[in-house]
Length: 334
Length: 304
Image 1 (cartoon, chains in turn blue, red):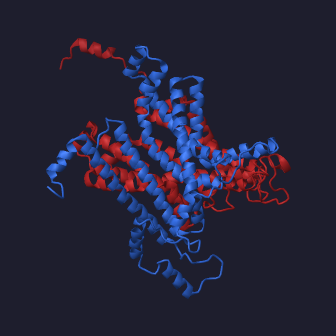
Image 2 (image 1 turned 30 degrees about the horizontal axis):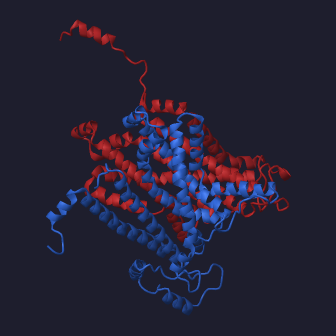
Image 3 (image 1 turned 180 degrees about the vertical axis):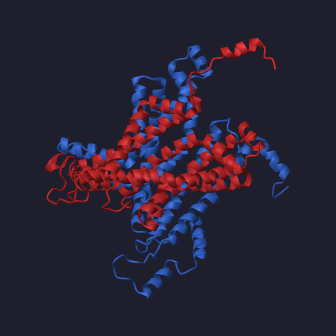
């Protein structure tokens, strides 16, 4: 039987777990399409609802009609809005986000390509920091429940989860850059701006990672406390396994399952957090480029960045959802 | 009808609780026992007093006018030139700007919840009560909103419509109603199947009465908790907007903007960053303590 699958064959596929898994993944991937479509639609509509045209100059000399006409033709703004939208979707599918308004002859894709290594470096380092530190603190607090270690860890997590990251970043600059510089006469301080593969990475990465670390630690603590009280853990202790083995093999393995679900939101947070952290520490990444585009109303750039960010978050959520199915065999595939 | 003597005796021996404790008074009791929640509540009350009282303090001459510049004394450190908390880059009193900044933060936190509540209730109740296709449609709609990174959405809206108070409130509300709508839907779905709803329905309650008298009051606890946690979230988003320079425009003092302004001259006068930064941090901390306390107090499963 070539070509399309018959309903009976489909049913046969879904009846096995690996078949159901395949269908689940395909459905999850397809679901990304309407989500991204609507994100583009909403942002695109907002851009076109903006009062005035992008060529209006506040207070300055107005451009002549001929120039505006030429600009409209160059940026494709002379076409009907619906057609513009369809053309935009078509070019986004080809990873072409159009021309930027704020720089001459620069494409949005070019700008994004220029700035993504900075954002990716900081995001990746933060991500690598979150899991070991967050999980480590959470397990430690749970194993030493109601001791001073537990209180200090959870107190830290509560504060870190409440203080916004630009506040934490600014306070870190005050202490580790300004006050440290003044106190040591310039011998020891962390740079408050710039980007390099050196100590200038420390503060941005810590600022970005602190809130997800706090969330991960709180969740890990809760799920570890749940696991500790399970029968199989008591059995493991009872049969005389050393602490290291019980913690790693029996407790950690199970208490990490719920932590995996937070990785999706964590990723989303890292992406939007880059907007703030890159502003605080003057890093020329995508987040900073987005803020500059917002300030100068560079609509193609705003649109392109929004699409890219949403795509990254959607893919991260997809990966987490699929990974979760593999990690936890109890998950139902619906 | 003759009642057997034994039964009467048994009846009189029944222990009647001295005092009936309702859900709300029980919750209030448990909230009061939570020290962190009380500390948070005290701080919130203090903030409200400051927000309402700061114009009065200026009129009485106790603090400086937050907009009045004294160009002779710019960037004074704390305690210098008669400024208890120092002055900023335009020679304005940091303390009074800090006190006035609480007005914007509280206004954002509370008004945004006022916008979220009707939207979240309407969508959540409709989806949960009618179920089926309506539910499916509305939930896919909320999924789309949920996929939108909230900070980006707020930034885009503010960039398009300009940074007025109305735009900022509206934009923050538009990204935050989703959580409430989903919560209300979940509550309605779980309560809908309970026996007392069945009873009310079979005794002829109309859908509006069912929703208003039974479904809504029974999901009030979680709704209150969600709205309370929404307050710090809204305050945070407004502060970020101000910090990025696209929030409420100067000269109106807001904490985020003060951090931004102070950050420009952080080496000369670090205190002008520290004070507003701590004000934001502790305000958010206070609201999340209150939220945690309410969540624990209003959860009937945690009753004694």
